[in-house]
Amino acid sequence: MAHVDALLKLGPRPFGSDNLAKAADYICAEIKKIGLEPKRQEVEHAKEQKTIRNIYCQIDGEDPENGPILMIGAHYDTKLADGHTDGAHNFPFVGAIDGTGAPAVLIELARAIKNAKQKPKCNVWLYWIDAEESIDWTWNDDRALLGSDEFTKWMSKNGTMKRLKAFVLLDLIGSKSMKIDEDGNSVRALLDIFATAAKDMGESARMYEFPTDAEKAEYKRRGIEWGIKDDHLKFKDYGIPTALLIDFSQRIPGQATTGDRFVQWWHTADDNRAAMDPDSLAFAGNLVMKAMPALDAFVTKKKGK
Image (cartoon, rainbow, N blue to C red; front, side, top):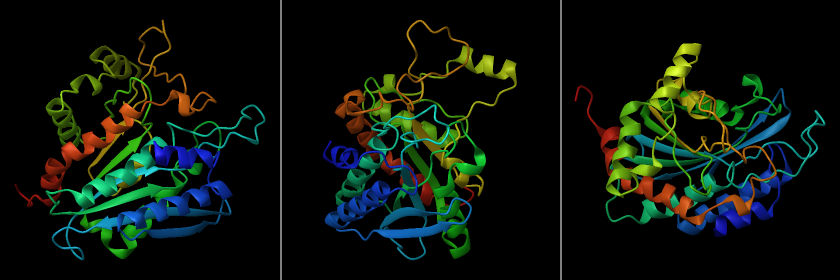
């Protein structure tokens, strides 16, 4: 919980804030302590007139310069709430689960993968994503996922996108009784890798409980495609296989199952340290590490096989 506490101590970290810049400095300092080189992609967003601060580092595989890439990402910005311009959502939002747990896990994943006895053949990029949250209180496609939008454009221009073979995104990580949902925008083969890893860990009960078959049928009846809007969509747009590991299905007690999702703490003041469980953070990290050999095989597989 040390990384969680360090980031939460900074307070709310919305896109473009001084606190978020301090968070970026903290993440880079921790990457250096692990013995890796943090790299920043800083872009001035013309429309929002704010600086996007994406951070990434590479753990070298067999061919650091030209080999395939597996990317694991998490956003580290928090929802703009304190002083929100609409006046209706004005409270200090620190985003313990939504914006802190996952990037904290990512730091420790960098350490674990670098020091693992079984080294991945592929290159592994760890990516801390800025500006995931919608600037408007309700979701606005034009004012959300700005960081990953800029990063994917940059990768496309410099040629690294051609080497990217899979993108795994962690979000809403660390709640009590955390369970990972099935996302309709993720690739089945990657979701199956994590389901198998969880089974091998004896943790199948934590995986893909929601949506149920009945809820999927309800979505189909309504003509709604089941899938979560998150940073993995920007990579999906480039044809990259993606997997989203997210806990977005905690129900309000007594709520009828109608195909609608509810998270009690999401974008509320209740998303604080008290809502977190260190065991859930550990599970998320251990799940990714357990899946690493299969992810490495997925990324390094030859075409046609």
